[in-house]
Amino acid sequence: MTIASSISKIEKLNRFISALDRLLSERGNPGSPGFLDRVGRLMSELIREDDWLPDSYTVPHPQYYQQYCLHRDPQNRFSVVSFVWGPGQATPIHDHTIWGVIGMLRGQEHSQRYRIGADGVPVLDGPLEVLSPGDTSIVSPHHGDIHKVLNACHDQVSISIHVYGGDIGATKRHVFPPEGGPAKEFISGYSTPVLQ
Image (tube, rainbow, N blue to C red; front, side, top):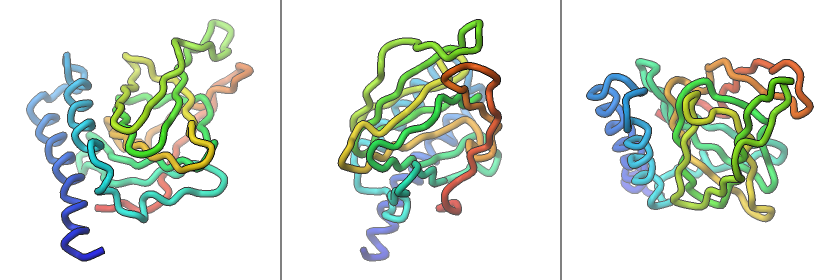
C-alpha cells in the first residue's frame, strides 16, 4: 500500500470523526431528540464502503474478539472502535452504560437484547437482530443497553465499527451471568494502542 492510499483511507475515518465532533458541538446534548439517528446516518456513510480500515485493525484473535481503538476524543465525548470477531466468537451478556451506534462493516453479527428480571436472571427482550454489511444499530440506557453479540459467520471474520459516548475502553460496565446473580463489573480496555 502506498503512503497516499493509506492517507486516503484514514481520511474517511477522519471525516467521520470531524462530523461527529461538529454534531456534538452544535447539539450539545447527546440525549436530544434525533441525536442517535444523526450519528447513525454518519455511521452509515462511514461503513458504506469497506476500503478504509487499516489491516492491522482487522486481525482476529484465535480465542476471543478484539476491540481496537481507532480514536478517543480528547474531551472524552466519544470513542471509535473496530470489533473483530473470529468465527463463532461471542460476548457475554453485557451493558454499555453510555450511548453507542454500531455499524456492520464485514461479515455478519447476531445481537440479542436482554432485560434483567426481578429475580436477577437475564430475560430475552425482543427478537434476534441480524446485522449485515451496511446495517446499523443503537445501544443506550434509554434504547436497550443489555445484549449479547456473536459472529454469525462460522467460516470468516466479521468486523463492526462502533462509536460510543465516552471512552468505552475505560468505562465501568457489567456482565450479567445467564443464570442470574450479581452483575460483575468490568472495564474492557483495548487490544492495541490508539490509531490516532
